[in-house]
Structure formats: C-alpha cells, structure tokens
Image 1 (cartoon, rainbow, N blue to C red):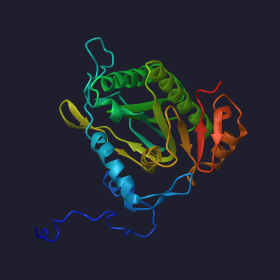
Image 2: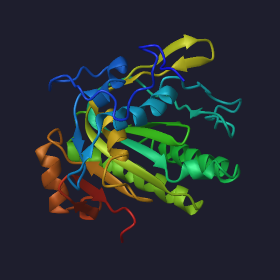
Image 3: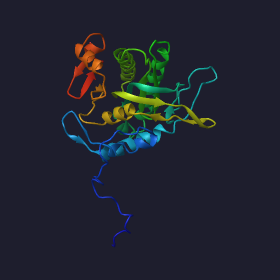
Image 4: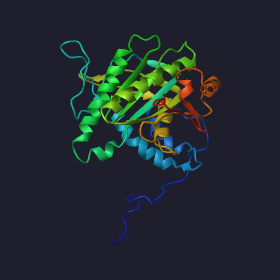
Length: 279
C-alpha cells in the first residue's frame, strides 16, 4: 500500500514538539485551544505534563463549555433541573470580570459508569441536584458563589471582590464541601481542583431558547488542567493549586491552620489539599 498524500498523513506519536517562546498568554476563548502549546507543566512528583496531553484533554470539555442549553424556570418559578441525558444545568449568573478562585469539579469514574447504562444517569442526577440545591441555599450569603454544571463536571467561582482573599476561599470551600457531602450520600464521589487568577464570564444570547456562555481566564484553565495533572486526584479529594499567582496571604493563611477551613488544609510542594471529610 502506498503512502498517503503529503499533508494528509496521520501524525507521528508525540506530534510537533516545537513551542512558542515563553510569554504571557492572551486568555480568550480561542487562546484556550492553544493552551497546551504555551508551556510545559510539572506535577508534584516532578514529572512533566506534556503540552499535547493537556490540549487533548481540554478539547472535549471546551466543546461542552461553549454550547450550554438555557433551561430557565418552570411554571412555578423554580429552577428547572435538566432531564437525564441533557448536557447542562443553567442557573442565572451575572457577568463577572476580575481575579477570583475558580473550582473545577468532576464526577469520579464517570466514564466507566457510562458502560452499564444505569449508574451514569443516577450520578448526574445526584451531582446536579446537590450543586443546584447548595448554590440556591446560599444565594443570600454576603459572599456569593456561582456555578455551572454540564455533563459530568461543574465550574464554581466566588464573588466578593472587595473582601479578603482568605474569606473568599473559605466561602467557596464550604460550598465545595457541601456539594461533595450531598453527592457522597447518594454513593457517588467527586474530585475538585481550585485555582486563583483572572476569570471572566459574559452571558450572550445567540438564538431564542439557546445561549452560549463564554468563560475566559487563566484561573479556569489552570483548575481544569490541574484536575488532570499528577499526582492524580483520588475520589473525594479537593486541592488548591499552589503557584506563583496564589496570593502570599493565602499561603500564610493555609499554613496557619486558623479557622474551620484552614485547619483542614494539608500542605504539599505544589498544592494545599482541603481535607473536608476530616473531623
């Protein structure tokens, strides 16, 4: 059999290893697709997380992220939970632009659940119900945490831009803990990665009944990539990415172990693990 025409051959293993020089990334929707080519990351064990691995993993989530369905309210004025098999749960969220903590949540073992055709719908129902109910119960909090849920994952971010960063981290950690707990009671487990950085959300209606909700910013990308990085996040684990962007006062706060949240922070070289199950 002859070779395929030049330009139409399958790529060789490893792909193109050439990368642009180190520079500040322009975090916009198109730039997210280029994330893996910008830099090579290291896990806690010192091993490299290849750029091509990151971009392939990010691809499927971004496909879901930019095509959410707007479900709105039911006839009684309550948020309408999507039917099993739908791709998203929408909650009304106001625009946001600034630095904040962003959490990426994932149902542990969801791919294997899809094989039997039974547990996956139950897991989605447990996750969506827990996420929607917890966020709704805290709508009156002084520091608001907003979130989106699509397929087997969710994205949370905390407002309160004028508040201390430690107070904002406490707020989102409490929400994460409650979502984990309620999902766990339904016999399903989650993993969560939190990152600090720039984050923007804009609501844009594209067609009647359907809307696209663009998310921009390094914080979301960092949280997502860290959720797939080494060391592996195990069932029910939640960790805060510790990098050069994390405010120094947050590092001091986590190490001080003062308060219900900080006292459960376990320090490693590149993360703080929030042991929410520990008494």
